[in-house]
Image: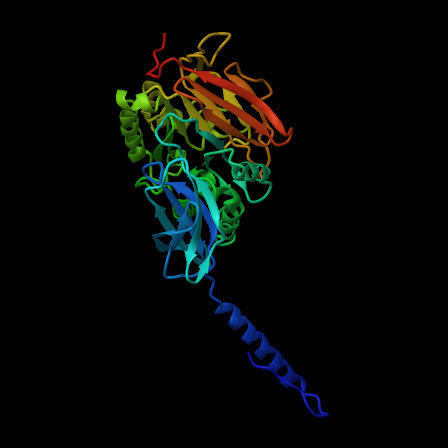
Length: 444
């Protein structure tokens, strides 16, 4: 940068002074514009296609030429190399960044690994994660929620502390991130990924898209996260312990200008056919499906779930096609977890607006229909949703408190869920699901 010195008794005239000031400012602007950033940020983990190996994803503002993860158990003595791809935001600035992805294969079960990511131009701090135990007979402990923004992210401090204390094996975030990731030419997306790093850099952070990810054909969602399968994270499935988790995109029913539900619908049926084969359901008896927009809700608004013919439930068009409620019923899906409504709501076992409890006293012991849960209150600037003044008979419990859901699959017969209220700073709902067998339902 040029330096200017004044000497002598005569002050420079105003034109000369303005020219020199402009030159100094332009030199500084030029140096800022030419500044190159290689430091890894927005670091997060996800599970690979086999549900066990880990994928490390991060971002750098500029291309580094390499994508490396150094990792190990007692000491960092292993290396995995991946690749970087350019991501261009769809906003007017067409802002670019590099997304790096590296697979860590053949990890030992039930083992703590330390890792750092980056390359010779810049490295992250050292993080750690713990792999799943061997086999399928172990107890997954999972945090589940949707609708977490940059602002009013009230659940995040609690999740961060619990994640780093080893409370969970994974996090499932079912739609709506940042509010919205494309805002400020993608700056909101960057900030969100930085904010969740204290959780997502220590645990696999598994996701599905919500309506707030729709911009530019869901590009921020599809490019920033690294989910298993061949469908850019829109739909995929995973086995974790005794549970088969099936993630799908409710948004394909609402943003059909991008991609309709036809292909996904076929994939869901094929996935459930495979999951319900006797040899597979013997290993992973619980089938849990997750997506953003619910089939049922008791919110006091005009969302689709407040109407009887919800698109995900009964399908699109006349005659209706691609409805999923009958599919999930046919294959004996145990539970359906949603978000979108900024509430928590637990329903009795439900099919076609009719309750099919296991019994009057123990509705969740051998229930005769899937159990629906809404967990969309992690926290965002849009605030809470209201409930209908009268609670319908098929709604078992509901709260407008901010919070998130804890999920545990204890064995082949017992599931446990509880809802943490940030407002009350305690668990406000808890229940067990007990099933002696897992099979398709039959309406009496």
